[in-house]
Image 1 (tube, one colour):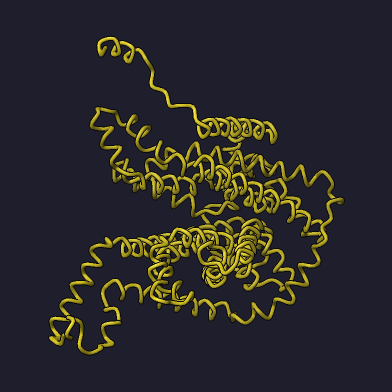
Image 2 (cartoon, one colour; image 1 turned 180 degrees about the horizontal axis):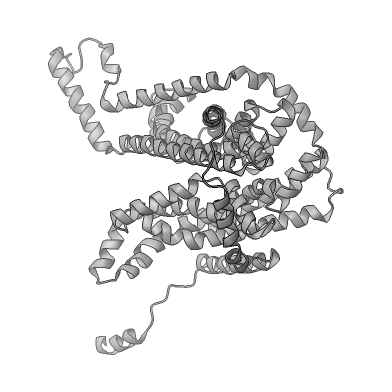
Length: 568
C-alpha cells in the first residue's frame, strides 16, 4: 500500500485549496490590474516624457543653485511658527479625538446611537482633506495661524479617533470585568481597566500624527494658513526660485529633525512598554513582600494590621520618571507654541460662529456650473491615485525589505531607512513642482509626484509590517535548506500579505486626498477645479467639489473595510 502511494505523491503537485477567500483575493488582484491599466490609459501616462524632461530638471536646479537665504531671521521665524502650528493642531486633535474614540468604541460607548454619531464624525473628518478645511477656515478667519491649527486639528480627528476606537475595542474584556466585579462605576472602569492599556498606543500615534501634521502645515501655508509655506508661496509667485530653494532646504532640515526626535521618543515609549507582564507583576509582588516584612505588623489573618496610604502610591521608578518627563515636556512645548503663535485656546471657541457662517456659504452645493467636469476631474484624480499607489508599491516593496532589520544586513537597513527619511522630508508639493518643470502641467506630473511620496510613506509601513513577522516560520524554512529568496517569499511576505494589502488600500485613500493638494501647483484633476473655484469665490461649486470628494473617499473606505473583513 505504502509503495503504491509514494509514486503518486511524488508526481502530484501541492496546491492550496480553492476557498472563497482565495477566489475573492484573485478577483481583487484582477480588478486592481484592470484599474491600473485603465488609469494609465485614461491620463495618457508615459515615462518617455520624464526621461526627455530630466534635462529640464537639471537645467532648472542648476539655474537656482546655490540657494539664497533671503532674510534668514524671517525664514527661521516662519519655520518655528510652522512647527508650532503642527504642535497645536495635534494637541487640539488629541483633546477632541480621545472622547470621540471612547464614544465610537463598542465597549465604552454609552449608547449605540452615540457610537453611530461618533463614527460618522470620524469618517467625515477623514474624508475632507486638510487643505479644504484650511480654505474654509482662512475664508472665515482670514490669513493667519489659527486657520492652519484648526484645519490640522479637525482633519486629524479622523485618523486619531479611528485608531483610538480600534485600540479601545481590542482591550481584553477580562480586565474590565475584573474591575466591574469590585463595584466600580463606569468612569472608574474606563480609567483603571482601559486607559492604562491604551495610553502607550495613544502616545505613539500622537507622535506619528505630529510628524504628518508638520508636513501638512507646510502645504497649508500655501493657501494662507501661516507658516513657512506662506513664505514659499510668496517667493514662488515672485519667481524668486533661489530664495524658494533656500526655504526648501530649511523645510528639509526641520522635517528631518522632527523625524529624529519623534523616532527617539517613540522608541523610548515602546521600550518602556515592552517589559514582560510577568516580570512586572513579580517585581511588584517582591516589593510588597519586602514592605510587609519590613513593617513587621501583621494582623491575625496575615494581613497588615494598620493601613499605610503610601502602599497605594506607585514608586518613582525610572519608567515613571521618564513618563513624567515626557508629559511635562509635551505640556511645555504646547505652552511655548501658544506664546510663539500669539494665540489662545479661547480664540478657537470664539471663532465658531464665523466658521459656521462661512460653511453655510458652500451649501446647497452647485453641481451644474462645472457640469461633467466635476465627474471627469474626480475620475482623473482617482486614476492618479491608483497609478501612484500601485507604482509606488512597486518600488516600496524592495526598499521596505531592505529597511526591515530582521531580513537585511544592519548597514543595508540603516541606508534604506535614511533614504526613506530623505524622501519623506520633501513635501509632495515641492516634488510636484520639480516634475512640472520636467513634463509640464497636468496629471502626469501629479502622478509622478505622488508616486515618489508613496514610496517614502509605504516603504516604511512595509518595513514595519515585515519586522512584526514571527521568526519561527523563517527558522523552519531555513532549516529545510531554503535559499534567501525562498525564505523571504514563503515565511516573510506570505504572513505579511494581509497587512500589505490593507496598507495599500489605506494609501489609495490618502493619495486621492493628496491629489486635491497637487491641484494648487497645476497637478490637474479635481484639485485644479477646486483651486479655480476658490480663486473666483464660487462657494457653491466648491461645496459640490467637497461633497464629491467626500463620496469618493467614503467609497474607498467601504472597499477597504470589505477587503479587511473578507480577505484579511
